[in-house]
Image (cartoon, rainbow, N blue to C red; front, side, top):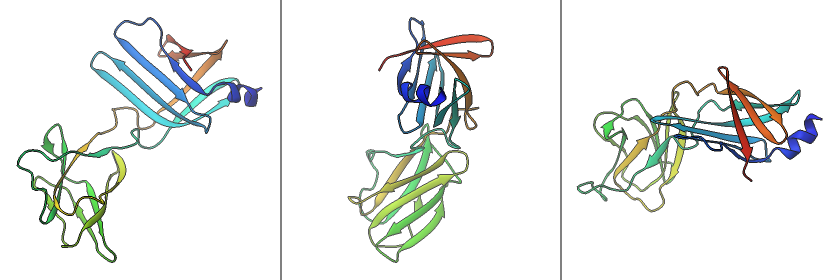
Length: 193
């Protein structure tokens, strides 16, 4: 019965007729899920694996909630776009220190560093091909930089929402709808696609 239910569940599920609340659960056929909830100024997001056990949907989040915790930003007015490469990581326009950086150039050029209050200067002169940014609290991203030879590379960090690093949910399934008992409040998701 669980296997038959697992084959019927993939698709997108959303809340209906909720004022000031938007939420969806996407179940992919490959066993991956994504979950999002917007309620006023609060935002939750998680992704991971899903399965069916005992007729219930089980969502188990990955260690990091966001797929791309670091995103390369376009250059701002005044940013160097050529010359020696340097990297700065920001959150809400403030520099973030302590992000692990791994710069990869043409073989064998490789350098490790940490983000700080000032841009980290990449210590080799050749072209920068890839940059890996990582931190235990936010996750990891690898960025290909085929078109950038140097200048300031400005990244925005998107930390995971509080409380969702260990996301886990058990959700009932009834008549093709998902019924989630969240702290005593029953939330119903209808299949959209």
